[in-house]
Amino acid sequence: MDEPFPDWLVPMAATLTQQRFAAEGWLFERKLDGIRLLAFKRGADVRLLSRNALPQQLPAVAAAVAALPHDQLILDGELTWHRAASGYHVFDVLWCDGRVTDRPLDDRRAILQRLPLQPPLHRVDALPDDQPWERACREGWEGVIAKRRDAPYEHRRSRHWLKMKCELQHDFVIGGFTDPQGSRVGLGALLVGYFEAGDFVFAGKVGTGFDSAMLRDLRARLDAREIPASPFTRAVGLPRLRAHWVRPELVVRLAFIEWTGHDKLRHSRLLELDVNRPARDVTRTTP
Image (cartoon, rainbow, N blue to C red; front, side):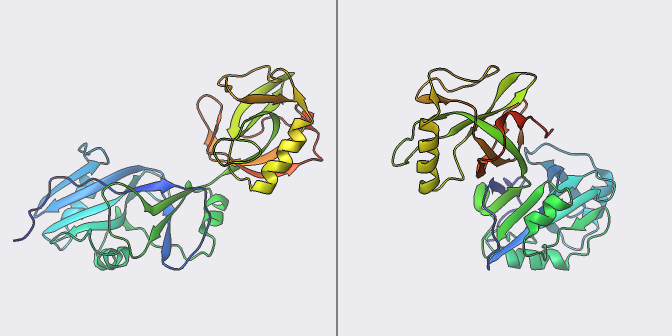
């Protein structure tokens, strides 16, 4: 018996990753900056729903979906309003006269390729670049999505779709660190900041980007600079337990996704230790 046409399907979500890779069996798409939109077409009736199943009134998009040559369709994509790329950007097909979510991504993309999309509908193509995340940052995109070509469509957040956001890079000064937990050696996380108008401002912590040798080397350098009290003069959110404080002398370069609304680092990772840069030269320069 044929499965009845659904009123709603939970959209698949990508998992944020700090990995950067290109591998056989994966494809990459531009991460668009808009709102997630699912289009449900049943005969002449078209419903447009956000990721939270809220109805969206978009007459031009609805008319273009209604004109497609299938009685039943469910499309997944992103609605954008950019001057050069406005419209509904379709990147997946969930239903085409029957459920297709159990098919591999390559099969679903083949279905999408055959659909005669007309503006304001646009097809999201795979990127041909060897390092698409570099192109994304160079051209000012939000990032890229890596997708497993052989994976089905899952109605949840999945590691078959990986979100690689463009990263900011900035130098910070180490003002402290936390103890390692479990099997980790050396230290848990670095507590970092920058100088501003005579203050040493706490910017957050970083606990990734280290190997065991780096952790041990940093711990030795920091033990030699340990002091009894926090050097931060403007600080919100400092850890209260298992924290050690050091003279703010060592500079590290970090990558991170963005500054939070509370002026803290989001998803930071260590890139390198810069022993030659004077710590007092480190001020906040990114927005």
